[in-house]
Picture 1 (cartoon, rainbow, N blue to C red):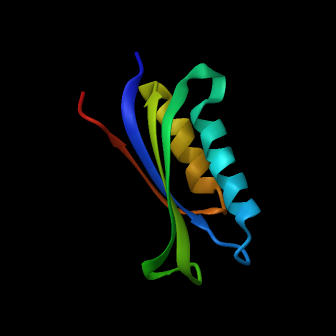
Picture 2: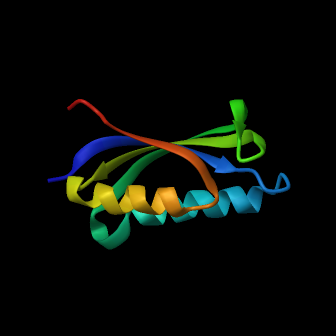
Length: 98
């Protein structure tokens, strides 16, 4: 049974190139929708923001919020992919109340 989640992540800005950010957003969306275990219902691009503190030499990041329906047992693999992705600085997955 799919549940509602919010996934917020900060994409690394590489030479201020929008194509790299778009590729990162597409990759994270593909991880959520792997094997029909999840479905992204809304993408909210917050855009370029200054970080509260420097992360891996980055002072700015590109913030994105996904609202998605995800199978709970597939969260482990999603978080594993997000941890290993060099293009994602930070992420947070939160279950929404029904």
